[in-house]
View 1 (spheres, rainbow, N blue to C red):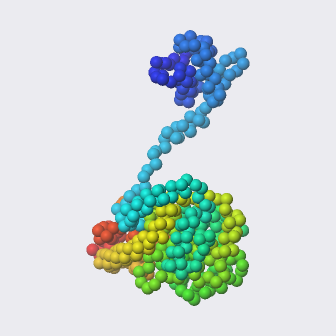
View 2 (cartoon, rainbow, N blue to C red):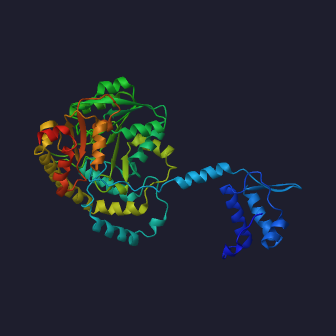
View 3 (cartoon, one colour):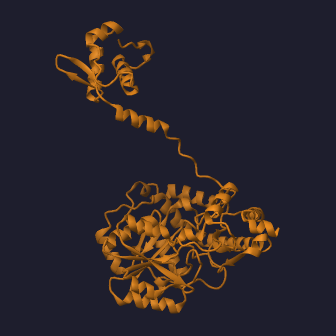
Amino acid sequence: MLTYDLDKRGSTPLYDYLYQCIRQDIISGRLQAGERLPSKRTLAQHLSVGIITVANAYAQLAVEGYITSREKKGYFVEDVSSYRVRRKAAAAMLPEAAEREYFADFKANRISLQNFPLATWTRLMRETLSVHNEELLKTVPYKGVYELRKAIADYLAHNRAMQVDPSQIIIGAGTEYLYGRLLQMFGHACTFAIEEPGYKKFASISASFGNPWKYIPIDDNGLMIDKLEESGADVVHLSPANHFPTGIVMPVTRRLELFEWVNRIRKRYIIEDDYDSEFRYTGRFILPLYAQDTQSRVIYMNTFSKSLVPSLRISYMVLPPRLLERYEQTMSFYSCTVSSFEQYTLARFISEGYFERHINKMKNYYREQRHKILAAIHTSPLAAVSQITERNAGTHFVLHINTKLTEAEVRKAALAADMCLSFYSDYSHNTEENNGCTLVINYAAIEADKIAAVIERLSSLFPECNQIS
């Protein structure tokens, strides 16, 4: 007979508490599938409650599928074993672990957070709340807030020699989102080309949308145009001002070849990713392809994730007029994925000159960081067993280490030493093993007072360095 201590129900209604008790017995397996429950009258007498209480509890169990009523036979327990398995699996799941913090983290998306002008940003946020309080409650235009698009257009004109109308700018929560919109707009019949090595995530996004893609090798001048032509691609994604991870700058001769390729067939386009281009430490800035384009074949993309903070998740793309019309006709039903609050704040941050001052400050900071970390390598045991490829741009360089260790062994040793390394092979689909180990050293998040210790610990991973020391 079912027996429950009804005095423990507290303020819970009697029928509801009885329902919960029987339900728990069924889920736990104490009441087996097919087992007949006591009649309403029998259970009511046993528990000293009214028949209506038991009737209501049984009715709720029946509605939810835990028991079933058979005419003139009574109530029987249903088979909920699959539900029981799911509950056990859910109970066995561990809480989501926080992202691990490393002694040294060389991932490409890591930056220095201590230099972000938090006080200025906070003040602008407060002012945004008071000035735009009503606008913040309205639906965000699908292209993004006009004030931000206008601020970006003015910045591009002043700093990138790009003449852009605010209507051509689309705001999105990260470049991945904007890539997705482009892939959807171009359709499955469009073939994309990607630099090899290069931005592997773009290939993954392309695959998820069902678009075919081609890997195009690079040489010392960047993407190889003859290989691009052979690929049959319609759209090519590249970073001509600062190729990642090599840092190669595409020279004017290769750019002219690229324009010849794209202008040869009407459906061809170039996606110019200007990521990390703000940080150039010698000479003047590199003119974007968009500013050199005379046939409106370049889609310009950039993000504030590296220049400000990754969590901001604000990126933008500039569409040429012909594609803009197509985007408006086919993609305008999508809502903007960035809150108006952050957009209004960023608009003021740019238009009032804070962004440009911050970039200049960070260029000086990263230039000094670069000098210190290169000097630390040159005076460490790594110097005798490594070669550095760096081009005075971005926040990374390539370090090739002559070692007998495999990449897997180096990764394992690095994690044991509380270090997260970034390998050149992480940005290539070519799985052919080469001699030695090639690292991509992103030094943006390595604080100045830790550089010597970081390089010392990095050297300790390689037996060849220990032999020298």
